[in-house]
Length: 80
Image: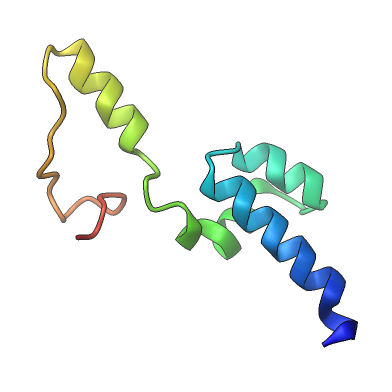
């Protein structure tokens, strides 16, 4: 609908930025949100790989190649 055009454009922009790994802090600031927590609450479903970079870094530090079978008990583990 034409009246929702700007909102749809704004949502698309935020979605793409987060999906490609842009900082939540930066996206929140660009959108004028009151806090990154608000942005995360609304858009976190678009960040399925959140936490994987940190796990990979620690695995590398510990001399492992990464755990391809991360426990599903972790809230940020990828769902398969």
